[in-house]
Image (cartoon, rainbow, N blue to C red; front, top):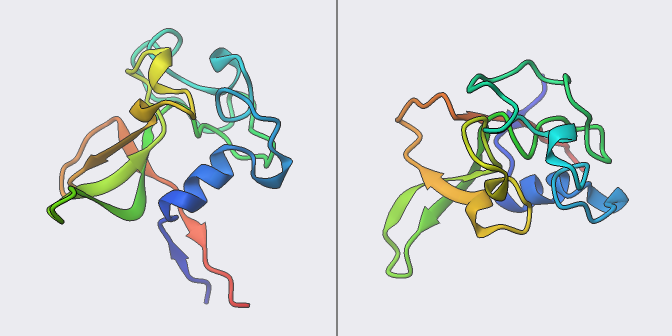
Amino acid sequence: GKSFRLPTELEWEFAARGGEKSQGYRYSGSDNANEVAWFQENSEEETHPIAELNPNELGIYDMSGNVAEFCSDWFTEDDGETLGRVIRGGDHLENGDWLRLSSSFNRSFMDPEIKDRTVGFRLALSVDL
């Protein structure tokens, strides 16, 4: 009876930054990527089970690395052309620069019909107010 969906890009970023508990970290939960993210330097080019590294301030794992994540928003050009669904976060094959929350590299897009081992999704629970 519950309703789940992809988070909006704004919701994704709020959660990745630690919400109202944010400590202003460079990565989601730490200033040290090795503590919170699987990426090129520590992943051995493989994804890893959730919760093997530390969570962020909200107790959410792997928002800076492991796999990038689809958001519900669509990425569009200035002329209105839709290029794909927004993806956020870094993945296990990227270098550390792609993981930083303030990096423009942390935001991209992909056609959701394409299968790729570097992109996944995280569900948000819709709450009736």
